[in-house]
Length: 536
Ligand SMILES: [Zn+2]
Image 1 (cartoon, helix red, strand yellow):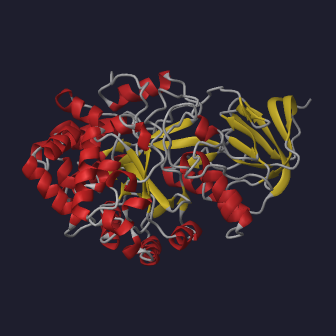
Image 2: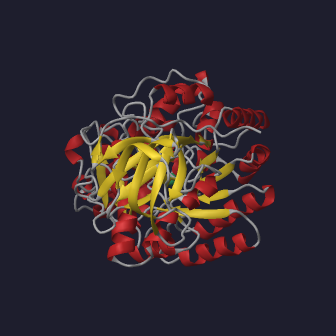
Image 3: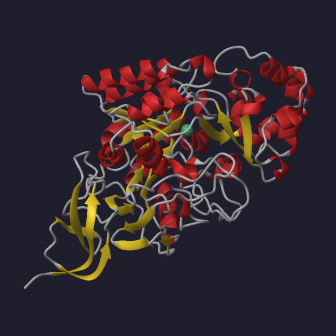
């Protein structure tokens, strides 16, 4: 007697996530698990015909901020409609937990530009509490949480621009340890952003033994993606090497223009480190524009005291004068970003307190004036919108994007938020287009890499990097997370001008054995889980 299973997907072109050549075959699913691959003998309660379609593992997005908004929009439609089934959350050093009573208001205010207006109040304190809240929201996709170093620092020292005391470092270490016991898979840093930028190497060194103890990984938005890119890469690699911790370099790039081409050197540094046995990789989003809060245009010390500190500084004549000087005549570090990119290449994508600027560049704010006057106008505007706006800056070279994308060790990730197409505001097109853009634009249209290698960069590779041993491949015993797409049509539709457009050519998505998208339609079913790191 042949066995009976829940679902069989028949006649697909199986691209299994390993990078090996595609093959024709069927896939059987029982519960949330793949039971047979290739020739399926079991009878099925349901059958999907995948004729003409690629059947690949569901995409794993190793760099997201999906924790910012999954509670308000648990359907995560922008991820699901790209074929993403798992998202690593909590990157760039900023997470919603853990929180301390003393500094909760500062954290909430700083995160505000990133969070949807319908976001529930911060009722949690520990990371374990926060995971429980995410679980209660019943997300459509699987979430792999990381804890942010910036958030740990805010919990113990707020937005004070100074080194942490020994006691504070111990408290941060304790909070990190608890968060990893609660199920976080690693620590992220945003060393470019305050308050991460206020920390030194010794602070990170105080936390690495905790990562080592938990076999947790480290992902870093580096201190510099421009002038000090190479030094920043070396710092992250050295930490991983010293403590035997797996390192992920986030959204790898060299920007703005005077730094273009530096990724050639940094990719070589990664390759050399890997050959010495250091587990280090980078990820990249397939676009030439970056996106973050507009306050990142200012020197980090301007954010001392968080957003309220910044607004008070702009309102104070003396401090404002100093800021105008720094913008008009940048002195060092990466402070020359505005000058090197230009006001007309920096677009505001969302601005709840002044949405008439959404979709326009900062040129429309500062006008064709001498640079001091432009800086004045920029600060006036920032004050008027209470520092709450997200921008897109077109500051990278396409040649660099391709260089990083084509590196055999790189992973492709979106660096995006959960986005509701019906909600106000625009966003970066990567939120809707990253994965179909890799497969449709770079692999198929430009012919830069074979389909199997492109799929591996968003399935098998990220799964291995995170240590998700039961996802990212199509094989018996793996979890049933699948994406079905038309290899001739799968393509991103999102653009900078019109970012909230779903891709074409997605046929079906299966998450934990449940069909979420069928014949291109999202049913709104939410079978995702928060995947806790199993403690040893
Ligand atoms: Zn980042």
